[in-house]
Length: 192
Image (spheres, rainbow, N blue to C red):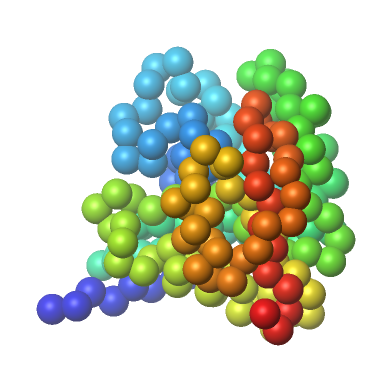
């Protein structure tokens, strides 16, 4: 029997899952892994940040994929025009609580773009189309809301992941240095 995948808006209760998605997105934690003690503080701070309305990793910017009522994946995405303001608050909170200085990160997105920030799928559910469903959900949202371009970053050390995004129509635009690594910025313009 085929299981139905349901995509929904995140709620405050999803904040711990969103925090894991964000940590997975920057390669600090495999989404399925037990949380190491040394990451507990940053995880708890990210949970708090995810519960806020006006941060990069807010529950309001997140869509959750569920199967049988269980969270199996998520995608954090938002209007690039709001990025600078949300980044200042988010990175300020991260530095205040963890000491991590993220101010040297490149500006990942900007006005006119709908930015796909962080996505992760539980390992038991990879390869069945959940990531594509989340991506298409957000790309459709961007089109319906007048965005001309959808963008994302992919770690240069993950060519298979870049091929996955390219299979969805994304093309390379530039290199960026964020979170201590080099990333390729990919974009998909309206009508492509």
